[in-house]
Length: 450
Image (cartoon, rainbow, N blue to C red; front, side):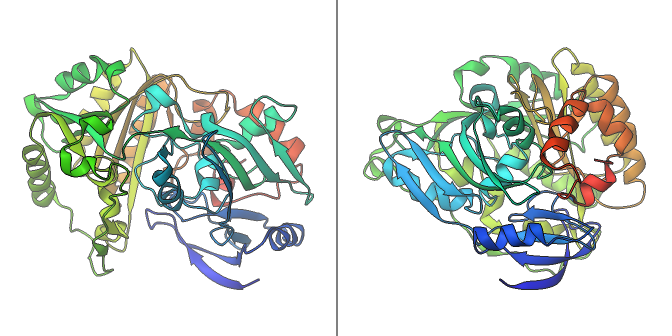
């Protein structure tokens, strides 16, 4: 069992802290690490794709789960898979796709672990049709603070702990293993409709129309333009293509896993690369290059995981890093979405990676992020004044009955967090029964007073 002291950050590369990192190569080693963790506690870490401090533990222990990555069984007939929590969604896809199976919920990257997907209860562009990741977890093995391992299901005697773990950011225990329900597909391609919208109002109107016709639905928007063009954007809506939808060339191998990687971004970019000139140029280019089309056949990379083309793309933001701000507000609060766009556009802070989506019904998880409504996400480089801008946005979101996504958060206060998650006390009660001494802790949990 390898042990080393490391400085860790989230994907945003902000607020580094140092912890003792232990490689979770086997279940026995992970159990021992938990039992021997000191007063600063322990937290599990996957591939480090939470944007903030969720998988950091200053002065404590962090268990790297990526070595616990065995797939125990794949039942093609039942469309289920039993696997370790350290298996990445990329590896899982590559294994199941040849059998005509698909992971029902994918976030914007394949490079997250199953354990991380459960802890953050990740969502994708198909939340309005498939829900979030926890909806497809049939069971999980959870390591508790006393070193025992319990098997939980969504409807069994341990269902309270199951739902507290999904979205619980690792604070109820360490997910060691899970059984997932998969989805049957005829191809790995998407049949896609692309539309443009001249401004935010038109973009939201179009997203609201005929949404039930598509399995996947998302929109990119321009956060730099102001006035009559504020929020102009492009809609991408799709369903999985059938074999007959494909052109003859692709029809010969409809289950080909086409996910190109062009290499790794070097760590040479200075801060300030994203400024008003470069951001405006990118927004104009992206708006123009995605031309309207109907029924276009796209692979996983071009439709869904465009950022996975370049490894370590977060380095583009420079050494100071960046912050992703993602919130959801209920339907009926469209004016708040517009107001946040106005505030961002006039703030001088810039973003190019902007996404607007509609969520469907949430699940039973007290800390699960999605709820019926509008979710908006923007990536902004860290610079002076960003904290004040985010505080202003927090106030708008909170007044609208919305909340922020913990997997993306890096600066929310404990008071605001508690106000945004009305079932927090319910979650704390379940967590305290599973971990009465709060052994499972992180920089995030300390910041939020959990």
